[in-house]
Amino acid sequence: MTNALWSGQAHMPSVLGRQITIERGEGSTLTGSDGARYFDATSSLWYANIGHGREEMAEAAAAQIRRLEAYHVFGRFTNDRAVELTERLAALSPITDPKIILGSGGSDADDAALKLARHYWQAVGRPEKRVIVSRENAYHGLHAYGTAVAGLDFNRQGFGESLVPDTARVSRDDPAELERQLLEIGPERIAAFITEPVIGAGGVFPPAPGYFEAVQRLCDEHDILLIVDEVITGFGRTGSMFATERYGLRPDMVTVAKGITSGYAPLGGIFVAPRVWEPYYSRGADSATFRHGVTYSGHPTVAALALTNLDIIEREGLVSRAGELATVLERELAPLTDHPLVTEIRSTGLMVAVQLGEAASAVTVCDRLLDHGMIVRPLSVNALQISPPFISEPHELTALAASIRTVLDGSL
Image (cartoon, helix red, strand yellow):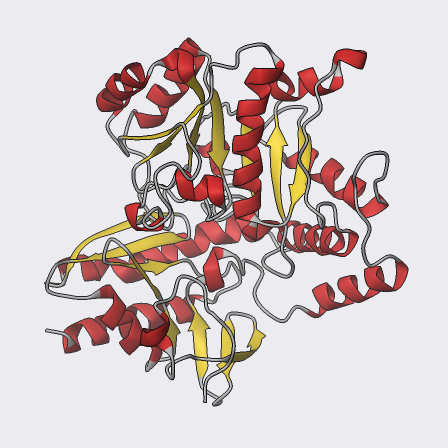
């Protein structure tokens, strides 16, 4: 007998009867319905930064629900927790003096940011700027706009190229090719360039030398809005609070999600620079109105969880700990570079891809790692994704590396 759940990103006949039901989580350990225990080496989908089962988070949610469980932030209405959260985020933001749009997750944040980019140019009288440019291998969620700009072809298949019109993809890592492609598209038509600081789901590709310098220069020269997608990297994943700062970018918008609550509730957001928010705030009766908003934006219980999550990250020094664990993980995985089935290991902070050659299957390796109590995710480029919680212990990373070697040895 199967359940009624239609799983995400799944070829359902391939998973029916093979699903693993997770029932409990504590720290970096998950327990399945059959009692099996697993090291959550991917932080679920990149987000369990403070670990699972935090009592403090449960108490924060319960306390807020008793006082005000939910209320919207449309029109004249706000709620105190949404206001408190946005002030806290503004103080952390890699953008000076931002306004912050709250939403329900990363796909939602990217979708709204791309809509705002096009709306902004309408508001300032340049409607011809409407093309959104993204990178090959990019992932920006799976709402309509995120699907349309995806740099992973399989995520666009079946929906048609015109799901959202006026999108284009450019080189992932070649600065010279990037400039040629932008000029070919026509900079006068381009509304925004959206990029992950480190490409995540597309294979964990750090930026090539000189790439982001070229991106920033071209955006400045041609009046193109720069949107940095920090849905994965934001709040410490690379060992910095935001990777925007790590790479010296000056974005017009930054999108966030995942680490903002460490997954304890769905939340996403956009940090919007003064240049972009000014036409909507500072022109009196002539100010534009951004006709966008989602029901649960500014949800007070979610905001309370985000605030508590940020308290934990700061109190326990988890951003710097992520950097320290990254050093441990890099050291433990380094010997695998000599393994005949491994072609490369790519990493930035606690974002790692173990790239496999044609003789090995990442899907098969990840399945076999489950038998060793390790949850590792296969990426479409035939790589193993590793992105553990910031509260992981060094011995867990040692055990993970040993398990990967054992499975790879058994695959020869």
